[in-house]
Image 1: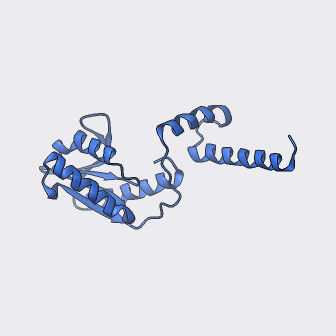
Image 2: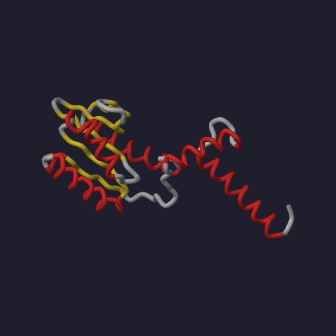
Image 3: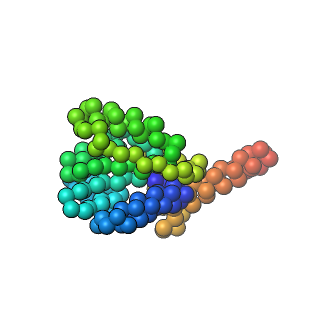
Length: 168
């Protein structure tokens, strides 16, 4: 999640899931690594239960499948916590994975919450790389993508204004 608003929403979903499982006596591990390179947002442990919780603002079949492949075989259940308007999309992705990977239908669960995600955007690897390059030139260390994009927009507007007025 690359925007500040997106990070805040993601942190909110993680906090809600943490609270839910903590209140029920689970041990919570944040940003848990198991197999593979990816991390899962939360791992809830209690007795023989091993529940992986992934909070997603953007639904990508490839990302979801990779997380399942990295963690699924070591879990008793996997929960995806998503914005309410993404519920249908995530369920379709999970149905496809259930068929492809021969997973019991009750292995996956979907939690939803109404959150405002209108200001979140997803950046491609190419765009992220370009922003990183530009950030080193125009930004200070520690600037967020939002800061860099805002400066780029301001620069673009300034250049456009100069162009329209016929000045250089």
